[in-house]
View 1 (cartoon, rainbow, N blue to C red):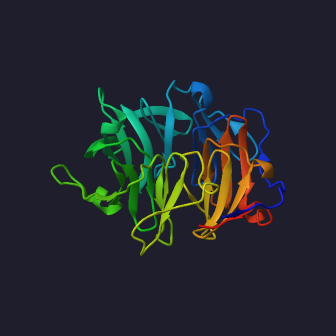
View 2: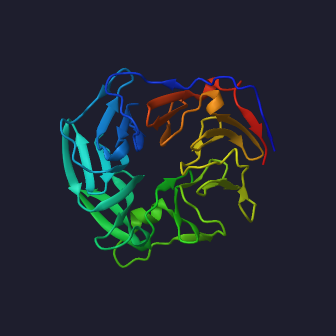
View 3: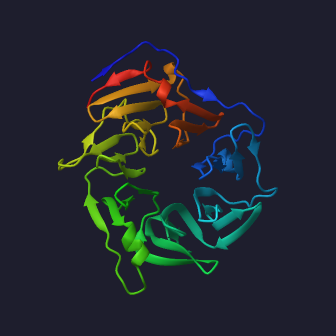
Length: 314
């Protein structure tokens, strides 16, 4: 059930500065608190850095690739996955360190990352799970599992990586990725679901698993045998991942709504509250939610939102 609240304007603040990118596909916060924005709408490629007061183009000519993931190595270098390889940016120098169509980057351990690669001639539904590792200054990629759909990976506090796979979702342990070697079968746990998943799957600090369908959201907490479908107002159209906030609540961004809360108690912000449509999202360490869409970049300070939205129960 949902109960409408007064349509007060929530504090979604648009960043109006020169060179603000529009429709960034990937948002990433580095260890210094800087915000990186990769890709842009309508096929435009690029990389932009936001230091809190201005947008900077870190390289004069970024390659014509589609950015789909970012991570940071132990030297502070920015790793960028794309449809044409993995690039590394450090000290203003950009170089391609790996070739091939890579999809996303998830840190496993110091200078070890996991990604999904679509081999030449294969469909995105028949990709490989690939470990990226730095050895003596060079980057090496090794296939640790095959026949994996191209899907974004997420990690949790338990040291587990989760991702959408055929018929449901899969999970594996980071320690197993680190210790894997050729000839060893990587242990992957598969969970069957009756509802197809379309976006990211993630686990929060309380053990609840959050899942996205094409126009819905589901959650399954410890002790529950089946996931429960959340009300339509909580999980609408969109494939963005559920975002865990520092107070333990979860934010679920969709095309037209942003829901906050825990299972059984959500508040929903809509366009009537000033919520902009969203293409990509990120929670930064200061608790803010950053949102990118075709109009530009917005920030929502979640600690100020208590008075806004409408309520929903599930």
